[in-house]
Image 1 (cartoon, one colour):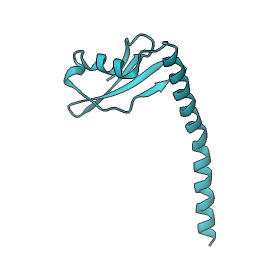
Image 2 (cartoon, one colour):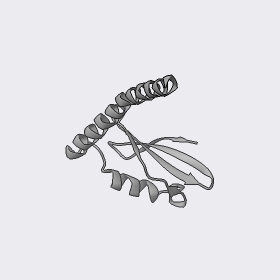
Image 3 (cartoon, one colour):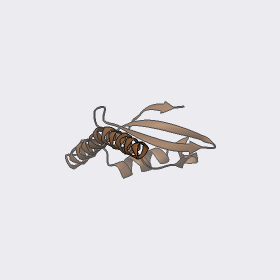
Image 4 (tube, one colour):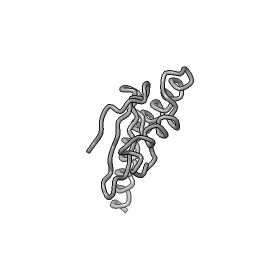
Length: 102
């Protein structure tokens, strides 16, 4: 009984700790929608199509699941190059690649 109660409390604490991250993700999405509506960012589908048409990304597989950082106005896109995941950072306002890992 005590073990079940302890596990329940730990689970509840872990779930509540994740709530701020979820709220932040919702805020980022709201900021992205607002910026797109005002023409401040390149639409994601256009941006992805543009990046996928450029070498070397045209030979890679786009993995989807883009992430958006509203504070820095950056998209994080993931590609698969053989067996390696390549992360590309793109300025959401201009569509310019600003970083890559690796």
